Amino acid sequence: MNIESLENFKRELNQIREYLKHIQYVNDVAAYHIQDNDNEQIKNLLNTLNSHYRGFRTDKRIFEYKASIISLYGLLEKYVEIWIKEYLDFLSTVIPEYTQIHEKIRDNHFELSLKLINTITSRESAKYQHLTKEEVLKKLNDCIVNPTKYQINTDAFVLLSGNLKHNKIVELFNKLNLDLNEELLKNEELKNEIGLNQNTISRIEKDILYNKINDLVERRNQIAHGSEEVDDILSISELEPYIQFLEKYCQAIFQTLFEQVIKEESRHTFQKVENVIKIFGNKVLAFELENYTIKVGDMLIIQAKEGRFYKKPILTIQLDNTEYPELIVTEKTKIAASVDHKIKDNHTFYIVKK
Image (cartoon, rainbow, N blue to C red; front, side, top):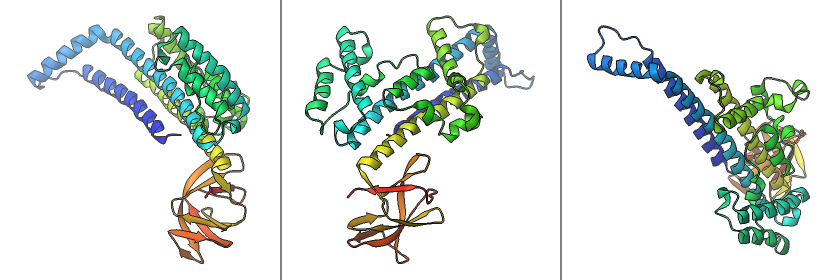
């Protein structure tokens, strides 16, 4: 997964925050009471602004509300699509053979690719004009006849990505053999945002947990069909909780896919550390190596007992209490490596295959 795309999401979300902040500044200026000692030019400008504001206030509120809701929903749909496609692309770089990808993903890839071909052929959506049916069919065929050099039709997995209420996003992830509801409940930041503990959350309907996402989609649909009610328009201060929740929700989605990539790396491009000797200070892993070259900056995958996966760079390497930037080990040797992550005895560790 591409961390840059998560940063792009945060940047675009912050642009909406800044837009709303700007609106509030303008509203504050428009509400300013002109003083006798104010500069004449400022008086004239404020009088013009106040006059326009009084006549345009309601329409202004409606326009700002529409722009905010459409922009927020646009980010949700845009980045869910981007991250699903990135995830599938990364699978094809991590998993060496198509046949090693989970059967459910392969079955869905076949069915969804056929639907994508039909969509392209019938020209039902301008969204896929950049694709040809021949290109989609070739990728599908290569997965069968040349499974070591395969590419996934990633667009096929986001064919149904419109009107993305929470249960619809869950359906998209189900095509990837992922239970999104289960994965999201592992994310501490999202759970804190919801404000409930694990036991309470498990007893609540998911549509209630993610009501702000569903309400955002409903409001976007109302705007699209011109049926929004003026009395139901959210103020600037009422929009902030939606922005906050969307941020945590989307970050949790990204983290879910990011961890799945690390999990696949641990299976296909990393090897398990078989002989762990001891953990020191929750930061230093002492283990045994043989026929291996290890250096500072190499990645260590950490699998927590509850199934969470983390990938961290090795910060220091020690042999006989002496630090080395790199070690070439031929015989069985006990070394220590530190990482900037809390590690425990019940964790499982993986190093890059070399």
